[in-house]
Image 1 (tube, helix red, strand yellow):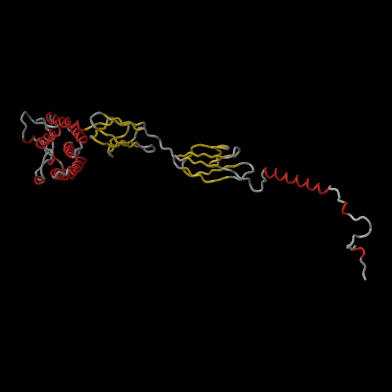
Image 2 (cartoon, rainbow, N blue to C red):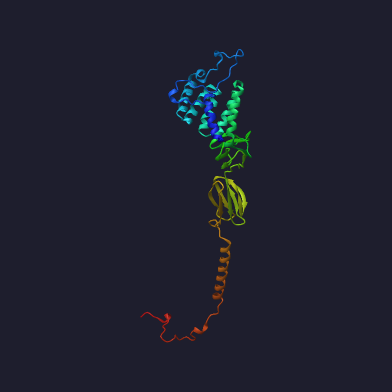
Length: 346
């Protein structure tokens, strides 16, 4: 019966417990040091002596690194691989002992973070290269090879340099990236961001080892909006005391508050606060009114017509002939009419 790749990995992990010693001891045995991958030491002759046995991590680590390493062993034996990883990382940061990278890889493997597992094993192989035996290097290479089918790669590029690249919220570098990013299979979130530019945020599906290209087109963020002003043909349009057009204006101005003024001879000035938002278009129709005390042209035309009409009417009454048919001819007053000049005091 042929073993599946994961079964083979589990089998090799069991062997690694004895050979590379992946900290698989239960908590009850935590008092007994469980060495990590051995660091080969030169021997004085063909036969290694007991004194030439490489010291384990439990023997070489001191201080805080030793305390974190002991705590990591307890957590690993209790199958708290996430907690063990944190402690192994802390021990490595303090001691820089490359053997801890192998133990970190063991934690990542049990968390099914295969891309990170490969990364830790590759770092271990590089940093401990001078002290690894040929058998130990072959063992590490075999682990890496068996994990390859369970990871993919993303090739991220951008039109802007120094843009930060994140995969699943973990920063993996800045553009241009030196090499593709190794990722686990499944849905992966890729973000590319740079201050002052738009951000790329996309989700890709990784199904195999083939590289997936992700190209980020970052555009500079412009804090401006568009303003359109419609006025009469001879009206001067000014924004922030600068004339920008006559009759019509359309253009981009910085976001924020501005002063808009529209003026014309003999007309009342229009002035208003103009607030522009990013990517907003503001359209204004301005109609000026006559200035106070200024008689508009139409009033002069209508007034002239009224004056001319009055003169015509006055002329008619002034030069109209007298109607003499109503006058009394003779010296006698009409019947029933008494002339004032005929009254006398009595």
